[in-house]
Amino acid sequence: MVYNVVDIQKILPHRYPFLLVDRITKIEPGKFVEGYKNVSISEPVFEGHFPGHPIYPGVMIIEGMAQAGGVLAFESASKEEQDAAKDKVVYFMSIDKAKFRNPVVPGDRLVYRLNVIRHRGKVWHLDAKAYVDENLVAEAELKAMIVDK
Image (cartoon, rainbow, N blue to C red):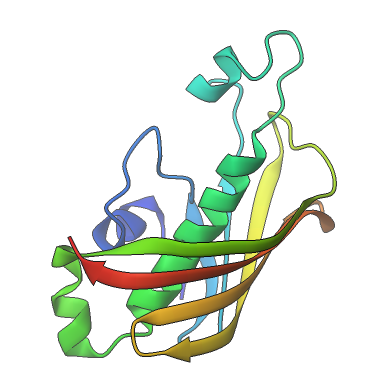
């Protein structure tokens, strides 16, 4: 199932300029999610990072991967939990083994691929990777928890 940005906004509370997933292209609840963000020079972050040499910040890549993971977590929930999702939010617990391999620049399509390492109750442990043109640009292990707003 493909989720467009409107579908994603029904799941995540994030909005412009901090919604960092444009589309979810693949999802297997409880196991895997793939989505992407089209990186554009018109994004506010490029005003200061860096003038004349725009590089998409690594922290934004991590956040985008986490948002894709949030879609996976909410869409993996039971129907009752999904109905209550409007009163929930996903919080980071930890970011481990983060590595940035190559810079991401305007015009790139940043593809997020996340696999579930472990899921217990409200806690999700995810293996997250980001690619541009099938080249690994960033990776991390993310832990997050679904909590009440």
